[in-house]
Image (cartoon, rainbow, N blue to C red; front, side, top):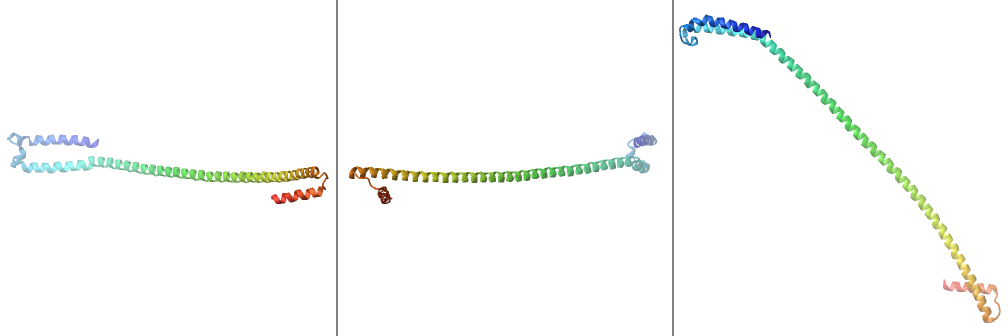
Length: 192
């Protein structure tokens, strides 16, 4: 704001300068092209340049420099804040990825544990089932063996009875039980 005031003062000074050059304009033609007034024009050019340079360097340029410095500091601060936020975001992403990998590892470990538990339970049930099947098979084999023995004994008894009845009818005499048993035994060995 100060430099605006100074520019206004400079404009007023320039109008005074124009008033002093007025007589050269009255002679006719452009004063810039009149060789008689080159010296005063060069002097006034030098004075104007020095004054303008002084005003710009002392009034306008420090304000502009301060504004540019403040802007650069604000940009640097914004960049630092953005870098900090980016680092925080990367840390959050890394934490997220780590938690996901930890969760996957925990899930895989739990799946392995459950799979092992299921396999162990399955093996236990298969062993119990095999044991039960073996026990039933042995019991069935024993029952079959007992039934076979009973049937064999019943067949021998019936064969003995049939032989006794047949010999009694044919010969009229009743044979001895030991003779009948040995004959049935001999006939059984021949067929086997």
